[in-house]
Image (cartoon, rainbow, N blue to C red; front, side, top):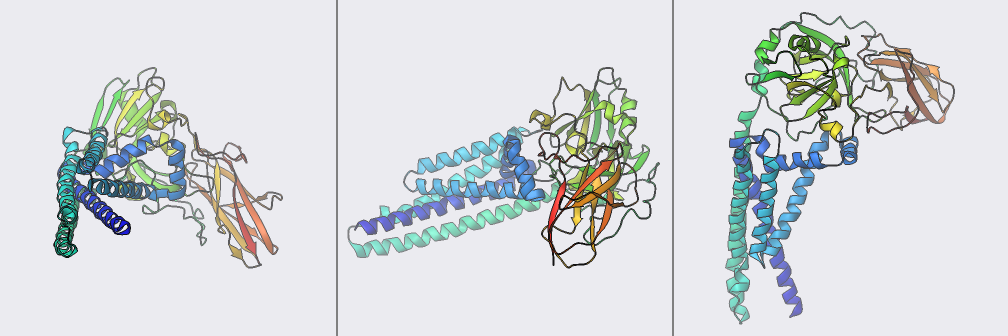
Amino acid sequence: MITRLHVTGVRRALRGALAGLLAAAVALGVAELAAGLTGPLSSPVVAVGGTAIDLTPVSVKDFAIAHFGSDDKTALEAGILLLLAVFAALIGALAMRWLAVGLAGLAAFGALGIGAALTRPSAGPADAFPSLAGVIAAAAVLTWLISTARRPSQATPRRPAPQQETAAPARRGFLAMAAGAAVVAAASGSAGDLLLGRFSAVAARARVRLPRASVPASPVPAGADLKISGLTPFFTTDSSFYRVDTDLIVPQVSPEQWTLQITGMVDREIELTFAELLKLPLVEHDMTLVCVSNQVGGPYAGNARWLGVSLPALLRRAGVARGADQVLSTSTDGMTISTPVDVIMDGRQALIAVGMNGQPLPLQHGFPARMLVPGLYGYVSATKWVTRLELTTFGRRRAYWTQRGYAAQAPIKTESRIDVPRPLARLKAGPVTVAGVAWAPHRGISAVEVNVDNGPWRTATLAASDGHDTWRQWTWAWDPAPGLHTLQARATDGTGATQTPERAGVFPSGATGWDSVVVTVT
């Protein structure tokens, strides 16, 4: 008798858990459908994920970037959905005994989604609608499923035979309703995805025709790209260029609606449309961009040919007021980045970029426009989807990452990376090509050295230079003896400063140390 009651209890809990999972699926599907009307940023998963990113400690963010790379957002979404599934199963199981508790759990879930949506940058009252619609639909589905799932126990007579006769139709009814809920979840979610397509900027980007540069970049010197198998190409393709930002979904900005405002401590405020920006003289410039989250030897660096309007020229047009020492740039997603005024104005080729590698900026890299300042890590220079430049002071305003403890002044560290051979490679005895890239944007690279097993440093051969704002490839011929070997590389920049051996993490102003690889020669 005790065993039978235990089995019955487990079955009831499992039915409740299934009911909770299906209610949550309907909530997400209906919310996605509603977000198709109000906009993708109002989706509960996106809103909660964005809030989670903002509240996540810096050390956890660095861990996620280091271990998941550009898939860190996918990992976050998967984590949110997993937690939601566990929570939904739990409230469903509780609802089998106390329906009010289950409904309260759904209300808490809805309140979380509404709160997250309304506190995102540029949020409006309509952004609460998807979470509200989703939780109402989920409450209805949970009530119906739980009511149906309870019928066998509520209608159980004293005699066994009628109990079986009563339970079978109830189980069929529950399964039929469960299947219906699954169909509603899938259909509403798919319809929402279709509606969300109207917010896409893909078609708008395809219509953009960039003018020719008034100041074209010089041709890349012969010998700048060594074309060694396994070596990072001189120019990084758009699809291979790293992406590190805080957006779960890529902002979709129409160039017809985009404007750039220059405000704050200026003699005259300026607002430019995208069409007006393209009518200004355009500069083409090769530049290496590096993320502060790049570990020693890491992949978060890329080199591209950029096209844009001179940022110093725009600031001179606005007239920088005396005392302004910071440009606080703001993205359409609310991200803020602070850049020293004196660095922008010191003669380097800072841009409001509209093109990358001969095409309009890719959506994930800031279309229709982004900011770029050579020599600074991206978090203090490379605002994507930029819409506003405020001239202010560091004492008055702090940007997103500096509020979280990162350094306000962050020139890119001198770095070198070994691309060939790969770590833990097994090599045959005989001549081996060691090759990699080195960078010190705005200072340039003057030398790269390699050592084996902490032996003497050997000078590598540098590829031709395309200017001091881009990385340089390098190569070194090695004739190794059989055995286990450790290769290390270090670079010297254009000022004569050699890369430090001191190991430091990315926080608060970029990683330091020498890249190394261990290989086996047979």
